[in-house]
Length: 347
Image (cartoon, rainbow, N blue to C red; front, side):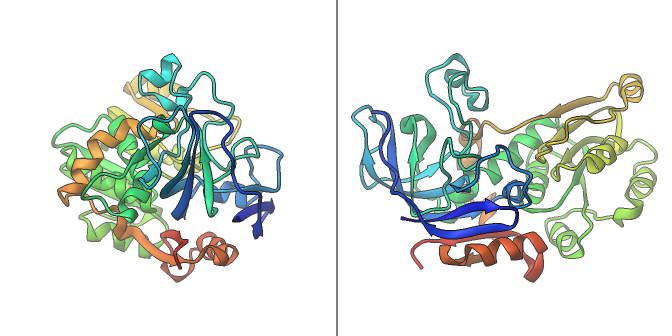
């Protein structure tokens, strides 16, 4: 099969790999119809990898068709169109049975395409372990593009907003207006926020924020502007969707008394100068971590089916998989209005 393979920093190659095979009776093989680049894939692209491996297939967002199942797969059948959760669990441990896939006690790899332990989804086919648990048939009324956004981006955005303790009438700030940040802002409104500020250095992304009702202050003066706009109260909830220590620090600075900061941007720094005294005095709640993707699907599916959420609108580029190197370059440089890059394997 053809796949996008990590060879080193800024070196994503379109290569031939061995076709995936069943390793366990609960595995399934999925022929990929569409897959996408996630912002966290840029960590790998930049050489900020999650392992020392090279030569593995990247990517963790995909939808496709079941083409082979093990004898232990009972919820899926050959021919089903499925969405694959970016978070991978064994489906049997206490954490998985509680729905907290990202705390799986047994899996060697909790996500596709981070190392050679579990090959990625930016390929013509992918092996899905514990397939009854890690893949779900795409519901009626949900398109392939919408399902693709649910495999990680939309689920993470919803998780980030949920973790931010948003109350009806709240003032919220979202730091980072990529697809996940914009979707988190939409989630904030759905959860009852009265006012949402969107902060990003890129004007095109601020414009996208304004299109969904965000107030987008000058990012260089955002704190002062928000302080004045809220009469000094600052924000009840702040969602950080970048993953840099500087933006996490800025998010803490936007938070008011007894406010909550929810960090969903991937951060690999080994240390952080946390303002402990300030957080203690103000009673700030700070949450950070990855999303247990299937845990969010029951809330998201009806919102998509009803038309209240349309995550596919943030897909700006659709290309063949053979254009993988060019797609990563465009996405990395944020050229041509790049927001969400999708590979359509039917092209």
